[in-house]
Length: 600
Image (cartoon, rainbow, N blue to C red; front, side, top):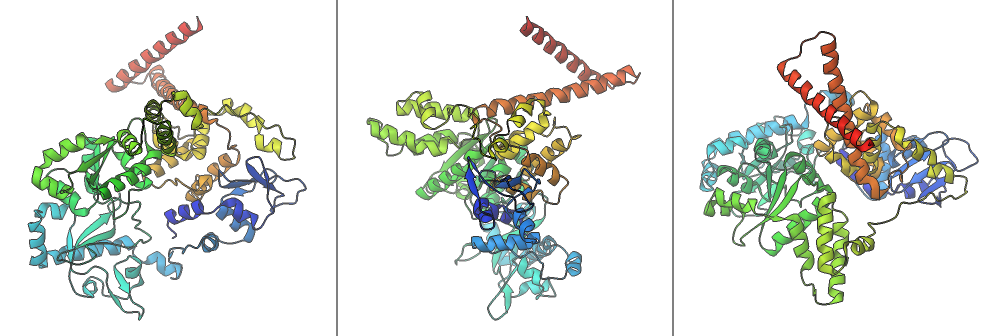
């Protein structure tokens, strides 16, 4: 199976206009490109390609989809073949999807995670056999309890010690799982040798990879599993499985840079820490953390490298910020990392520093103000100019407003002047009124007139398709599961909660994520009937909040009606249900009173 992350990356790198333009002569009209549809005979151009949505749609025959879908429909290719052809044009290698093995055999083989779990058990057993490895862990202050909690093991120094765990050392899955390396002569040897082994788990508890630390001197000091069909470094966080309950209890997640940092902090009672896997913080990391924690603290060394890493983490965070979440940055003294600091200063000192971590907005302003001469107009202009690409990406509307005010003050501008220069006060767009054959279809005035009649879950789904960042702010309770749009919304919320929702590649990437699922047809139909200018940017936030409020009210009415129906039919309510019925009744009466006051 081709990893979803690869498909997302591929679609993000592929311009659907360039791809379709290789097969169909496209002509720009307004924001989109048009042509006569290649899938049915027509004389007028009703085939539309949207660069912003990365989506094509024919208003004549209804054909629509992503870049992959177009190639499948136009060239008659299968999904994998279409992916391979587009990847070849982008200069990418498609990860092995296992199609080289017979289908029947593949279905009956154990999953890669089973093999990785077997390897993890082997490494744990070898740790018990190696006094040298045990002494190393004891020297780092680790107890057996912590080693057991994190499943720490040891990979012996031999070249093929995994043969003890896997009698068929030539099994191709060992290579696919990243457990062995094969040289040019076809000879195999263990990837991890003479290393302390840290198993990496997915949110479901499956072992999906390993990190290995060398015991003595040598390079590389740390080694990770390669990317495999089940392991992608940019998506996973070490220790999240073990820290999940503590993060929920404390409401705080601490992000550090190394396995031993996580282990040492846990040893001293700071059990809400996780680590990135040898990569910079990614948007996927941020999404997953903000779903779990109310506050995320990134911990870095206080040197220049630590500052650069913090800035990269800040950059990855901006588009996923929420006003009900908090992000901070903790910089340790230059001579310390989290491991050494907690040993020298203790757990409480670390917790106190994390509690007083630099807020994201403060760090943003401090970094932007470096080397700025605020005494000159040129310096203030440079400050405001450099802030624009960052401030405009802040997804949390209230936080963005606060930062805008601060930037405006320091720049010597009014907030309105700054917003105007940033293009944040654009007036509502009017229909173009062009009289080309395709203009009426593109502006779709009828769709705008009907918008008020749509169910709120339908409107919300259209917002999310055009602005996927909004999905992280939607709670699943209150979304009706009786409608197809509601069920599709719930599926989007679930995918976002797992950190799997595509954040790049437009609507096309979302559709490919839900290919061959019960929600595919609903999402395709909604996407095809949603004009990309349906929601004015200036009114989006207000409409989003209003739609959520409507859904909340509908859910409350349904709950009240069900309880009232039970009473009217002579049914008995539990004490909890009676209490809830009273709360809903008072809320309805209060709401009715407010409406009467407004009417008068």
